[in-house]
Length: 359
Image (cartoon, rainbow, N blue to C red; front, side, top):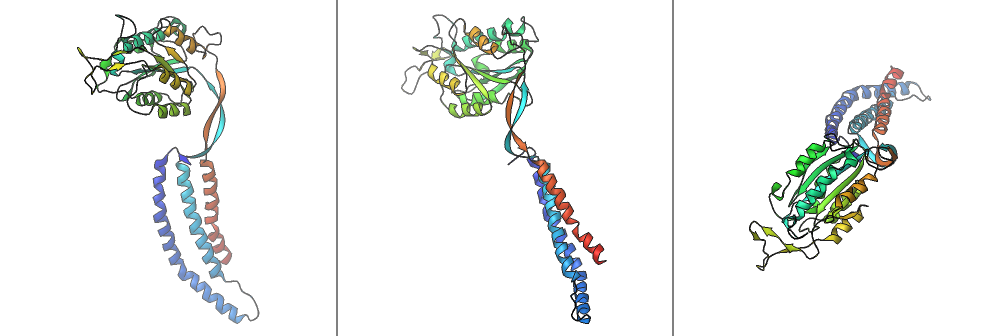
């Protein structure tokens, strides 16, 4: 069982004074109950051969039941305020639009220039592909500030640690401005942690906005820390698909470090290679695709894939259509505790009936 408002459960401490007060009231009534019990014995002695009900004993059990029922009533109300959930159910929903997070690996290896002689770095090529993608007229109808209805872009960046750099937005100009200023110096630190990058990108999606969720991972696939497998499992559980775009060459290149090159513990320059299999496996584990980012039509391939999702303004004939389906959610259980609270409240009123009967 889980709770949407677990802070409300702190009120369960109110049960302690409630139990104490019930005990005090019971002790005050004990004198009355004892008197009724003595009177019953005298009446029984004067009525030989007849059975007389003991009102003191009867009220004693009623008072005890009342105290227990009131405490249970209070406990159920507090638990209901915590909005408990348990189990799962299928709920029909209509999904509209596509949310896409552009996740950029900013590690030092992305500064390697091994795509083509005299060409851009891996990161430079990745930014170029992303810029071409968000400016695609299929999504915007024209390059405009409003972008496509139902399509939102955001951005996450990661080096040793991943952060959400740009929340989801339909403002194409804001996305383009971010991409034009992106460089490897946007984050300090060193190392590569693709798990942290994907986790940061996953946190951008909002449950209140039903949509198809995609993360486009721009990377060379090298990872030095973190558990990429764990991040992929979390993404799959949240129904987030990873689209991997790989940059770099299989032959690799030395990693630049200022005017020098990065050297390993052995004193030799560190060579970085494109880990295409790592990226391909990451995409397949979440039902996504792998795109070779080095290709001239890499942005067009990514755009074609997003177009198949029914993005409004795309060339897909089903663009803009609402997608009807089902999602699984946990069941709210608060109403069960409210019903139980009402039952216990009724049981707590039993002594009043007893007083009227013996009054």
